[in-house]
Image (cartoon, rainbow, N blue to C red; front, side, top):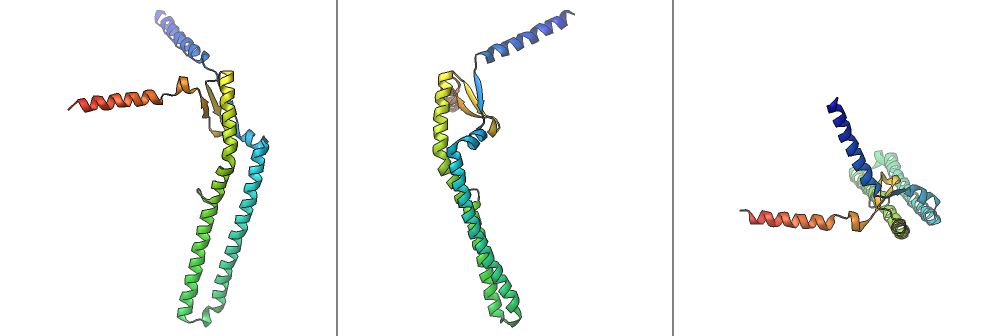
Length: 183
């Protein structure tokens, strides 16, 4: 009985300490997807990107049509061609196929022009949002602000209270110096 009440008191103490620690922190969150949907600046960027994507898709489709024509011409004339002409047309087909793949990658790939344009057009908007968010956090006393659209990524943290980089660098330097002292 005494053990059970002792355990309950320890548990209560831990819960109270945690509650007190969190009571000193002010936490908020934003949803950047809602911002993307509702801010006119993002809508303009989205329209520009859609037009660019359509342009690239049309160009890729044109290249693919030319590729299919080469393949079709080859099939129609294959029986009448010399072996050298077949090899030449096959090489031409393979070259066009490689060009199509390179084009697609350069426009739509992870580092493609469409992705780069998105970054270039969106960056000024994000900078504006972050500047206002930081001012709002300081004005209203938030310690942390999370973005629920990006799996709870921290978009603001009070750098004076929670940035541990300098302390970490100091500890790493101390550890390095300590390691150098020992033979």
